[in-house]
Image 1 (cartoon, rainbow, N blue to C red):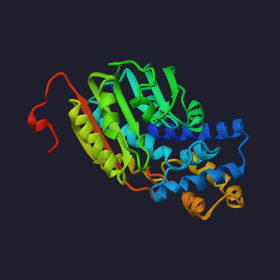
Image 2 (cartoon, helix red, strand yellow):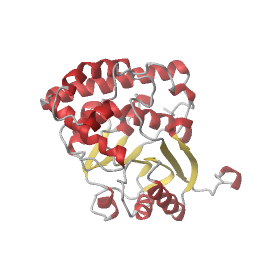
Image 3 (cartoon, rainbow, N blue to C red):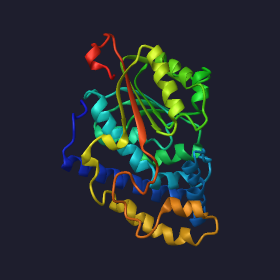
Length: 310
């Protein structure tokens, strides 16, 4: 089925309720299966605080996948849903390459938008902790290939992925702070797509150098840019009060125990925030700076000049 052109406020409410349920259930199941205690979650939030200073946390640390799920996963999933609605032209992708897949925000966004569709995906992620959490998050009966690695492995040709196979490629915080070779990454990805293919890159705006290298790399690889915006420009329908009540309730239950644990640093406490921990907007519990979203399209026909961004 084609993707919808847009969602009404009621449809957004329904989608976000389903996202709230999925993430909350995944957190509870994952914490139970891993036998994680307050110390693990405290360490996860404390490690995640490194992002505030433009540093990469240890995404393999036990507990960090749960901290990320509370702090940033709803933001990332909702951002991707809105981007797909605006950039995909109602085309449901059939083969997806997700570079830097983390805990599978892209797959969850597509499942929420097109729950009846069957797609295939290759997800590239170096953290077993994040990959394992994603397994608790997803329900769709897709053909999934999980690959452990990062974008350097993709550039170096060490990964077995099909040439000309993918019609959607996503890069979701795929290039770490300080990363180089983003132009080479763009050139490599261009060989793995078949037109008409869509590429969506979602990165923090502070990664300005990496974003510019991606723009230049895709331009040299016959992709033209169709969108360039920040997450807060997507749609006003995202700003619904008390968006994620189940996730809020779950966090409230965990926080008293986390706050008592000596592994929680002051930075970790700042990541959690202050009582009563209400999640009141889709940009959940976050002082994270705005995300930059770049969308590139590859086509058999060169677009008219009026269709391109200035």
